[in-house]
Length: 284
Image (cartoon, rainbow, N blue to C red; front, side):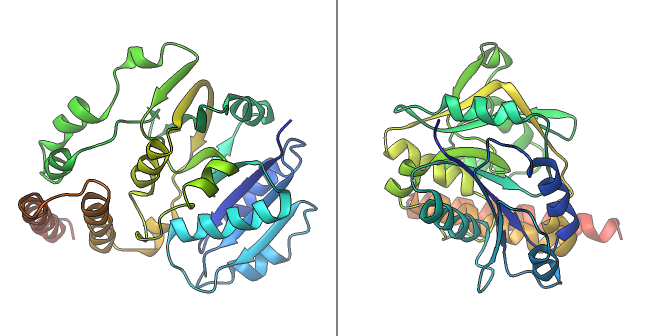
């Protein structure tokens, strides 16, 4: 069986990370668990270092360069430790319900399939992956109200796409997924050009360019509890600005948008940001 490692990203959320570790630390299928403290501003790192779990290693980034950088730090550490392996990337706020589910996901990775994820239960709905976007879909997603229509029409697969045990998708949720280490090295890890958001779409482009496929295993599910640290630490407006900076990076570098397309992206960004400000005034 292929060695299996796990990378958990922590930022100012010791209690949530500890809860996940308590959930999985006795899983015999996991050879190594690396917790990356992404330069927390509280005492999370000190508390995590005090935990005495045999196969858990806690490391700290020198500065918080974002989620992708944290994943790169953890995965490169794992590969140096384990060699060729399968790597699970996980938010701290997930609940894994069964050790056998991890083994099932690991068995899904083949020479053709380099990335696999479970069904994610969050906000009372199922997150089972989505389609890659193009420039004009990204522009449309910036438009308030009608963006819901565009998501349903162009982003999500129909329910019957998931009627079999395994379903191919373009993109899977970044909160929990598994990657073959060889593929990760071949695509030069995750792009650190974004601080937060759009990591999934960017990585999907890299995987597609490497001629590998992405899979959702409909037999496996995990719960995303969404006690998300970014919601605790960052204002709504700032989160929006981070999101749209990442969107532009993706559209410009990976979709190779032209000047006109970038102009419309900029215009719709400003429109939706203005409406967000107005909404904030009435909800104080």
